Length: 111
Length: 114
Image 1 (spheres, rainbow over the protein chains, first blue to last red):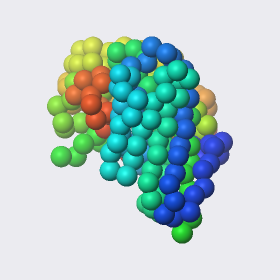
Image 2: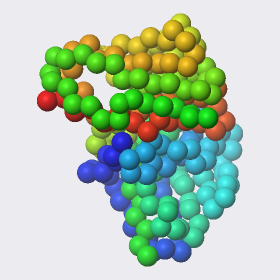
Image 3: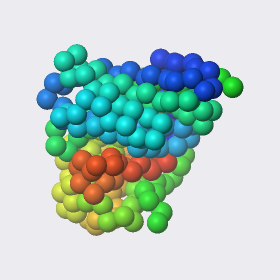
């Protein structure tokens, strides 16, 4: 479906720069976190995950950092490309069968 | 593999009408769930199922029913549509409730209730 759009925080970056998208999570007992990317008209797509026993995890051009002390999660995208333009959501696993999603951040990449 | 298939993609209902949003997956996933996405609020869990014959409520279950008679299908029923149910609905599935690669989402159903 179309993006939530209207009330999202927006991060605008120049193509080739690095992007950092932040997320504050709610529950100190959360033990698993995921970042999703949602392009216009599509469902969320898995990017990277991290368990609470880690503070950093790297993928291809993406890195997730977890700071449990302040309940903060970040997604770093290296050498941002126009195809990275999307809405990014963090999600936390609070209880065994549920993920709780954040409100999302729109990333706009300027050519 | 089709993944997670949702139908219809778009729907307009009048207040009080009922309808069923369809969700099917062909990955033999045990876990399936329904989310709604509203402006500025991310995705909120409506109902979920950990296997055939088992369903449970999520964060915002009121006004919706689900059933899971097969592993593949997880329909969401709106009993009496209200304008507050105008939203984009996503179905998701995974091998377990928390799979290392997260959920696979369908492409969504945009529902407007007038």
